[in-house]
Image 1 (cartoon, rainbow, N blue to C red):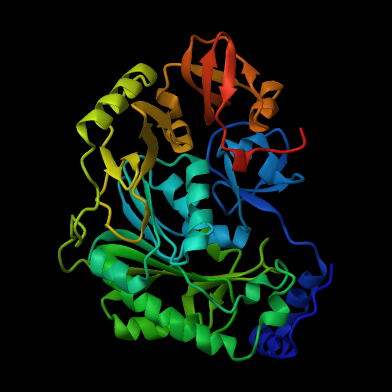
Image 2 (image 1 turned 60 degrees about the vertical axis):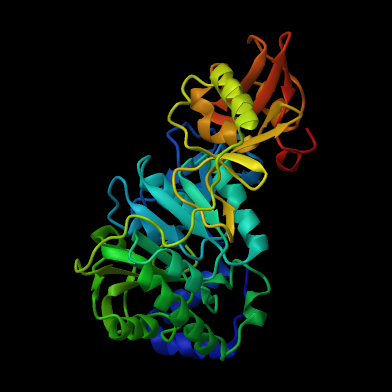
Length: 441
């Protein structure tokens, strides 16, 4: 593999790296490392090797990982290893309130949601509506019950959530110099003016992101570029604008595989010749403890009470389908019924929580996310393992044999929910969404 890199980029990187430049350049003759983040304790049936400095990170050898049953089950998320290092730098604790401000397609959202635990809460935001759909599909696939998906601009998020979050992640839009090997068109789309343009946008985003961080909370800033202007220059600007924040040292395991920032040793640069991955800049900042952590968002809650007749139909369904449902935070938002633990704004909210389904003609129609998020609670479970032919039959949309009593059931793979079936007379009618099905089986 050989990538034609922009000449101005090469001149700047040679000046930046000095003696390390030949090793950096040689990486662009190699095939990129394929890696994934493992979000569930299940066995892999393909070759995978743990990445020592990244908890949950693995390199793997697998064709079309998106078609693999464990991917459908939400066991892993394919992600560049240097991008994985970003969230890996955060000292998580149980019950954190988190914001992923520039979240699509969802790699950092997956890591945050997995590491913050069941008591935490995450707002995963993407300003672009079409990219927000991709983000939501990944949240749905992974089965996270405590994630809200929004598509608001940073200014609006700042007005909604002042002093609210324990962790705010800004994986900022950048000139993408770390994407030259990943995307064929990236080198030709780059220009020498891109870093300055991107730095201005990054500073605007950070200006509003800082306002959402609670006292004592963390702000995680990252880019997939090597530009000093977008990286250290932006962090330096931020610290001048917000003197209540302090730049923190990253864990030693990450320092060993990265380089110190330019005149900023606590910030770290991940280069492809230092460790597997395409490149990343990471800076972890913490706000001082002065002030009061806000406990409620500053907007009118858009969640609505479910009309009585719809609620009766929903509760009847849940009581006959789930082992436990009394703790669900039932509400209506738009045409769907949800379980949503936190308030949701009336606008720019793509999903306030777990989509349960709709009531149509006095009948409850469950949504795929109900099976993905609350599969462990189902009274009827069809528990499959990788060697069962019904796994691929199900993922392709076919009806399957099952030894369950009639009613709604969840299909699981090594304990992880794949989706739903409607059981009748020993057959499971397939309710796996058509857009997710694996074709050609």
